[in-house]
Length: 593
Image (tube, rainbow, N blue to C red; front, side, top):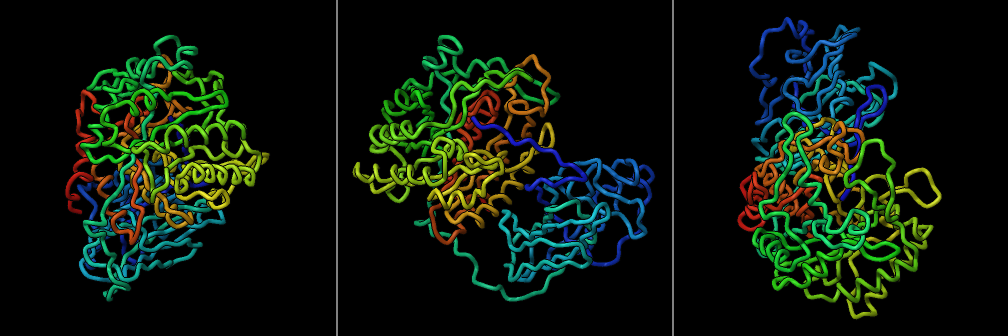
């Protein structure tokens, strides 16, 4: 359903906000002398840590190990420095015009990071580093210390200066430690990253993991319902019997190593058939999923793609096994099925609705769905989510009018005998207020509109995909850092997301050149194996269980986004393995950390 976020790092411009790095702990000693050019250096089988301190070690913290980097122009070395993870860049390390040694350019290296080990004893973890501005004045660098699940232990922004210091106090023994940097202003240089540990009693008692009775994590999986014939709008625009299965069937590989088409193990089934939906319900419930959140469409002239709900789910004989809820997908529906590169983007159904239409929507969902015994509730209140805040505001003309409409929605629910509503915002991109051109403050907007919680639809709404095939774990780690930010900035609970993958190429016309030209021509996520997906789920569950209170809710993308490459339904390559990963984490004991 959703689009993507274009990403490119401009050396002398700005750094992407999702850039994060597991920085290796390094010695605070003087820089090593500049090494010979990469072509002349001896082969190195692996980078050696600068020393082990209480279980933590540093690799290539002064960036002097240039082997493996490509020699560029004007003293630049391209690639990715030894011992680090991130995105490769032509402008990774600079050596020209300095006698001190190489300088790293983190603004060009994406989520630049390194895991530095497991802490052996309770300690304060001290990260030191130099922030430089060798290329242009005015630079700020963000540094963080994280645990192995990317929970932030310490963080801050740093101006240029030597010997900058960040301290994580009272870190418990046994925790994996990651250090990360992000250029927040300008193009800072980074050098002499180092680690130290000061043994100390923990600052506070360890976080209490929820008891077995309290440990319930609700798993709500998004469901995109465009895989059935007979929708009146599709029949009118695309031809009788058309569904998005046609794009799945037509997909083919677009670049080396690209796997398409993805073939559903259960066949190209009609999801509006109650028996077909019953199979999905059983599979979801058997593998640890608690609810489907249907991408629900309703425009000024009425509903769209509601047959999988009304004819499928609600008529399935086993629908008591699974909860269901709605995310109102109130975005513009654009003709991209498939999209020809460079063609005009025709809006078929505008996402903004009139106040009168919104009143009809409220009455319809309260009357037809919210009273159903399987409709998902949080603390007794039906859950209803909004995908696009910009179009929501556009329909009412102001924040105040929109808040009044949402308050009226809540009042209607109470008048119908419900205890209220749980209204959720899917926050992504940069919402624009009516009549404005500058992005609004999303945090303030969530507060002003009175939302009860915030969540995400897909990782790529918060994380750049710098490469045609961007590694799954890189995207995961960068998203987890966004999760830290979301927890801090929103004044309401944030429900994290785990995404199975991303590949929107089936929606891109198969005769056009494929590349990162704009949705659906976008970079993809690669390496998203069932095992890696399972680890992302396990990391998320650990973080949720460490919360002192609830609600502990996780959204998953997606049950069936076949044309965006994110689906749990079985295919002919992996079978049931993604669902088995779900069950391994949420249907049995949590895998060991």
